[in-house]
Length: 184
Image (cartoon, rainbow, N blue to C red):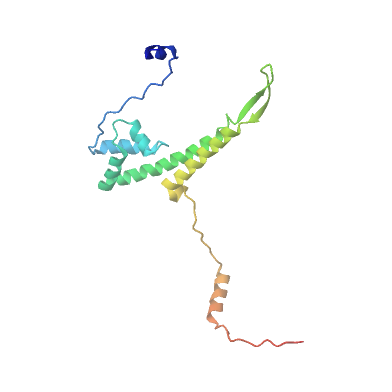
């Protein structure tokens, strides 16, 4: 049987169109205007820098941006500030995701298609929880002073306790061993 007839007898497979290809080159010319745009996009996005660069054909690749951060202190400062704003953006998104309970419930239908009750869509609730936790963790990494876990514990003692500690430290301790007598 010829191979031509085999190919035509099988149903055609549906394929998704390939995404538009980027030009093989990327801009590498450092300009303040381009870096301002990069910082603006980063500060308003929950996406990674690699994804942002891939979605914006006029942006350089991620490695070029990292090189610019090492070479240009002004861009480094602006980018750090953009990351802090991105942390705020991510923290705000956690509230929006937490407040959106529209898909937490799914209807229970009877044989006629009438709604007879609702049940919790546990899969959606867990996915929402993961999205919240991931954004909160990233916000803590990007801006630890504002959104990170505070592990510094400060203890303040009153003046009375401070006075007792000073007095206790001023008196020498009697550390000579003493004989315990048996009273039996």
